[in-house]
Amino acid sequence: MSKENLFLKEVKNPPHYKFEQVNCYSCGSDEYDFFLIGEEDLTGKEGEFQYVKCKSCEMVYQNPRIAVEQIKEFYDSEYLAHRKKKNWGILTPLFEWAMNKHDRDKEKLVSKHINFSNKTQVLDVGCAVGTFLLHLNKKHNCQISGVDFKEGLDYPGFDKIDFHEGLFYEQNLDKNKFDLITMWHFLEHDYDPVKTLNKASEVLKKDGKLIIEVPRLDSFTFKLFGSKWPGVQAPQHTILFDKKRFVKMLEDNGFRTVKYRSYGAFPPYFYIFAGSYFKLIGKGLNLNRIIFPYFLGQLLLFPMLIFQKVLNLSMQTIVCEKISNE
Image 1 (spheres, rainbow, N blue to C red):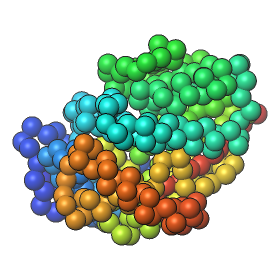
Image 2 (spheres, rainbow, N blue to C red):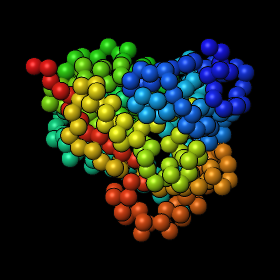
Image 3 (cartoon, rainbow, N blue to C red):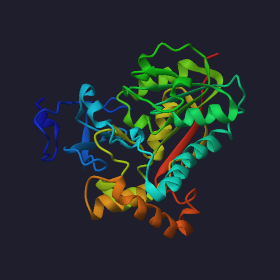
Image 4 (cartoon, rainbow, N blue to C red):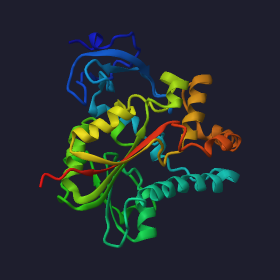
């Protein structure tokens, strides 16, 4: 099938982009309906990317998708998780507090399910510059490992992490090693989530916990912003999970849900602010220009954000254990 026939709507893309057809990640079906066209609104890069809904199981996923050898160009220094700028003028303390709070909120969430010690083995898949792992190590003196396919990652203290570069399911990791595996906004980027979950099951201890956070498709902010919802983030996001499909994918691949939460550690306010920006102003979120209105808006919306854990604003988190075959 030609590239043109894979798209159900007219799209504009640079000629060097390579696209590949993909079947549903959940059920394997190749039958689908059009869902939406997404763009790289965050950095403003070129391209229009098609998302479809599987006719069989209703999973929403990007099809066709950018070839894996080209996706790395969308994870450059402009990508939010890889930005290293630290000097924000008079707002620097507030920015640092916000970034550190994200890691503190992750730690607070996982601590409800893990009793940390200096022997606890933690693996963060999609660790980026590793700030969450370094936070855990500093507070609990636990053993930290990370995986990311981004080259040249660097951050103060990064050498403390047992770092593995490349695709997670291709890494040579000891079986039954980890007490905790986390995937913070990783699975929606995955090119083979089934392989990833199988690998997680292989390296997780029998009584270990796998904790995954992803954007929630059936959320208030998606209904508000549609194709300009920051959770689309095309083409990096290959899958858009609603609650039903998220839980089912975990359970279909050997995991039991311990706890489902309609929130996460990632601040839902970012989706409110960024979605409003994309919808009203356009592509390309320049942090240098928006950092002051960002924090001002957060202050104004504080009364609503107090209730973010019960409002289903944008995120979802699953805590799960692998189902033993013994």
